[in-house]
Image (cartoon, rainbow, N blue to C red; front, side, top):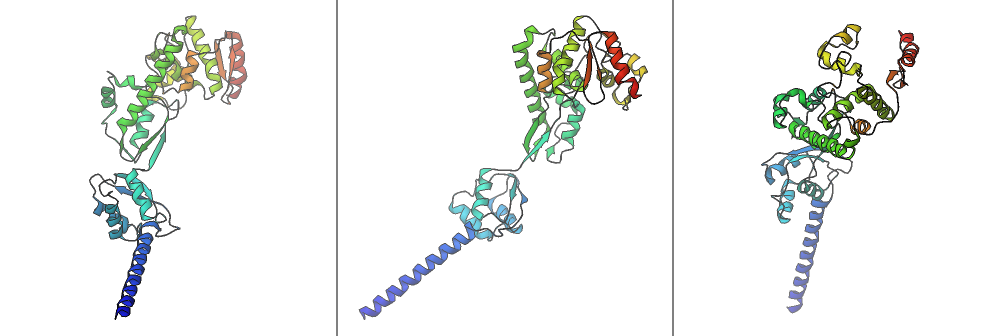
Length: 335
């Protein structure tokens, strides 16, 4: 009798052990193995307010997990049922349920990037953000942005934003990127002004931005920017007009169709540096760090003129006679 009881006990213990092993194996299979090792990634979104059951249902619907019930139980056993964060994620069925859960808890959402090139106008920056499908257009118009930044006129927005590559998540509002870019620019130009402004011919960080924006439009070669800055500062110091086409083009607005004419140079606008002395009233583009540095640390020389070679570079001259020779060689011959 005792032997039969002992045999039954051993058998039951063995069956229990097998059951535990099977349960553990099933648990490991559900939680720590991928549904499809070769699956491609896809975007998975959690909206604010979604609960664990809703999230699990969507994961199962998109065939990212083996078992909705198993995933939900595992999340609750880990005490993570209320810690899944909203946002847009990159997930794949090649991830295990545990890996998916940890990503949703960590908030490791997809980050997008947008690059604002140096020399673009504020209007281009505005349209770039408005057209991005992952950015929310919260600002009604540029006037609303100017008001938020404490600027009295929309025209004061030009040149006040630092061209940069910005990283953001889906659902970011345009005002957040504008504010970040604005703050970066103000910090940078003021820091450089504090360091180099005392030696500058210019009177304020705003004048630095104005001249830097002109330089940004005059050349795409960074190596030339300090030299061109030297030319413009030499002309200002001698009381000469800047006579730079990009300012005229900016003053023409939508009327400019890609070909600047002699009549445009003679038409007086606040931005026409052929008819007016000094700097224009505002920047004409978004200058980058290098152009700002060029204005505050210009190349020292006696040059007063430059003309395009037609390949992106320029010929520099100290006298008007030398300049006319360069114009004849590089400009008139191409017409």
